[in-house]
Image (cartoon, rainbow, N blue to C red; front, side):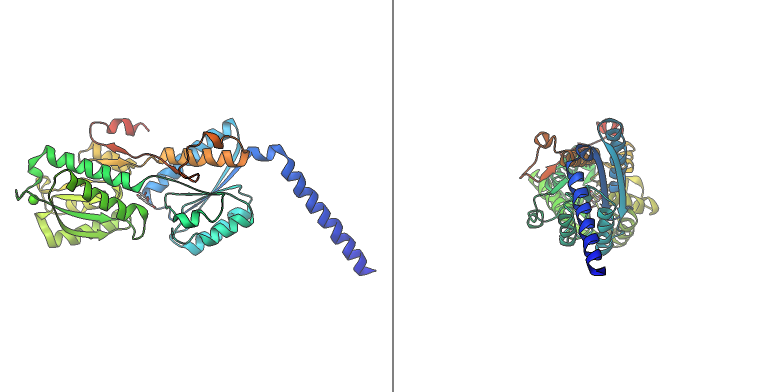
Length: 344
Ligand code: GAL
Ligand code: CA
């Protein structure tokens, strides 16, 4: 008797859950709710923290207009395991879109499995998974920018500065002695940027001599430290510093400013990102130029895609590459046009 009672109540409970589930699926209002869970690899990253600020701002605007919006942000402080747990939490909290900035870009499987189990689409951003992983499920997307383009543009900026000023070849040997400050190992924006910046300089007829290269993980303090070590070895021989991002270019400048060199012995510095501090360094003439990494455009693309995925409307207006990728173009920034970017 007792068993029967338990069984009956079990079945009723089951039916209720099923009905509730069916109910939720039919409710059109549900699709008006955009609950975005953002998982970021490390919030101390300057470029990403500015990008997330822009996303929050744009999300509020979207909330005022078409959608009821919520954004929950988690940062993994550089641990993929932490990020996996955070994604689980975000799904349990009811997020209907996930924006994931992977810690390990080659290690998204656990997150993909979780999202798929709960049918929550994922928009990866900034740290690009390999194509095979993005093919694991049809609700996986990527928003970012083309690393090669940023490298080519950085090379063009450096070449233009060198061609415009013969004094940059300070020792007058017809070669440009350079060093590279590189981002994280294995990141799509590190090696590809370096390779393309260097090749572009060569294509433009600049003869190069590489003195040194160091990894500084996108970080200003690490770059300063690395640059101090390079300086102790090469002293005033360096004529060009190519940095994979603005923060590392600024760290290199910090090292020079702390040293005894006069300004005339400083090399040319070029960065990538166009962060607030990066743009200011271009205004001040400390950096010859930078390449704008369109954080506002990338944040907007994620929200547009997220809104289209939950509402089922507007997917046809989005320009995808290979049905899954959205790449925002980079832009060159010099002292002449930096004003246009400061207003962004
Ligand atoms: C790059 C950016 C770097 C850093 C990195 C983090 O695109 O240029 O500054 O933010 O992403 O993944
Ligand atoms: Ca030289």
